[in-house]
Image 1: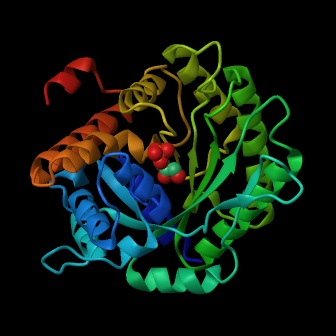
Image 2: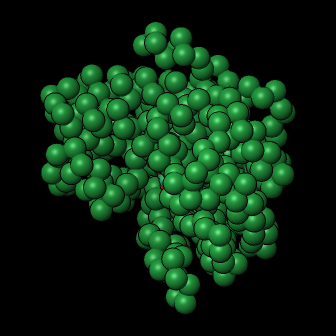
Length: 340
Ligand code: 13P
């Protein structure tokens, strides 16, 4: 493991004013998002849309990394430039989603464990050769009065740690992602409790597997009430509870912490991140974004409506990246939003 290389990559991903864009939707997720907007999901439409995202002019001012899906890592622009090379030229770290998805956890109704460890060492070597410098693995934790079970929390934390160790062995920065799912009627207090428990289990496993946190990134959900909860917490409560939970449970030496948007609107994703930086609390790690829907949605909608609006959709994408870049330093304001 080349720790200084891992540290340099991680640092670039969450450099000041920058975060990560997730465009690593699996074929089935991509199909859902495209078909909801009336676009057929084929290898070529996926390539066309991802070209829009990868080549958007100016995105490199706000993006330190982009997470790709296997197919995308191998694809090229219309004029034959590998997507990975375009990103490298822009100084954006190319990442790769390496898990093979969340599968039902045996004997645990309503819970999943993320798979993909078999053959991972060989796949990482190939991805490194194709130019990937970081990877992502997403674990899914459902919340109810009784879930998650300790069995689910531990199985997912263990898999995340095994994955992270394999990544570091291959000089690839692991982005470890436990996502507390927003579906459900749970209150914010329950989300806090579960997030804390999951983070404790995760960092215990990472330590046991010898993972160097200085060369790893945590990607996590914000502490929020479930979508169906009778009480929705205000922005201030969400930001305070999220930062409190992270400060109490995330070791100070991890290279960075980034959020997924997880079904929050693009506006909320930006406002919450911004407010966290305005709390005036000293944070031991860079705290930024790794949004998928939270950055892509407006651009996707514009492109889906009019496929010739390629450049206009790129501008919309870069605008959202810019707003989140500002938010990652607490510098976003409604005025900045309006000036675009
Ligand atoms: P969302 O921001 O759309 O939740 O996606 C981020 C991601 O990569 C989830 O794994």
